[in-house]
Image 1 (cartoon, one colour):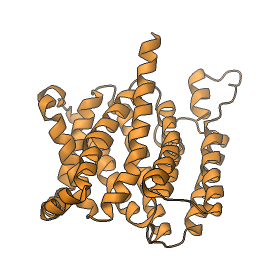
Image 2 (cartoon, one colour; image 1 turned 90 degrees about the horizontal axis):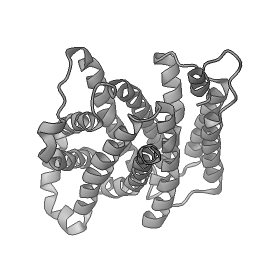
Image 3 (cartoon, helix red, strand yellow; image 1 turned 30 degrees about the vertical axis):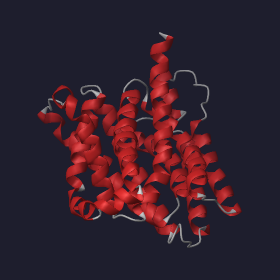
Image 4 (cartoon, one colour; image 1 turned 120 degrees about the horizontal axis):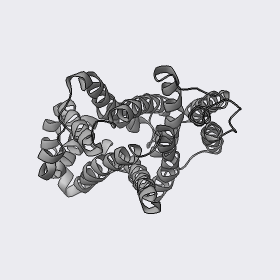
Length: 306
């Protein structure tokens, strides 16, 4: 039983490392290649990896679920990667990674709005604190060679996180009837079709990518950060509460900062470090759990403590 409980945790931790690596990897390739081309390559590599098991994981979709399935695919990967790939053209991978920590807060707010789950004052205060930190970090950012417009890039990254939170809520509902890899397959096909206009750009730059080393980064982004990470996250999320699973995203900014410094030599100003700590403090505040009051259900107490 302990091994079974540990496997979803290991899956989510592996996801965090892969997503943390994806920020400097994406930052590297979007500086030399159009974001649509990068995303089409990611989706195409992921789909090619899944082809051997296509007939086994392709879902039998119920007509009643089509709107929810369409919403899930539109939010993730289509809108999410549209915003994030463009965000990384204007901001650093460190700042984008730090902003990704707001996902659990956005999930909690979305669950309150659409699933009627309780939202504690602590979670609301944490969200406001984190957003204040994001705003402060963005306003303090100065245009550099690595971040030509930090404010615009960070706004686009916040939009990407809103899409991610919405997708997680829809996916949690669908995971009761569909396997995690089936949902991942649908998302991959939808993403490849959505970013199809980027295919001609990729083919025009094929030789340059091969000699420049970006091809290996695209293969990692497609097979590792897209297929591997989303498949593992969907599987792990289907086996634990949505709030608990989304909390693992808190580790992504740590990985993004470490890998951004290690591979790209990025850094934060002193003011941005304080702003980043403000973001993480807001996330931490929202994740603190309080003792349930008498008469409150355990489920209600858990949701309110997110």
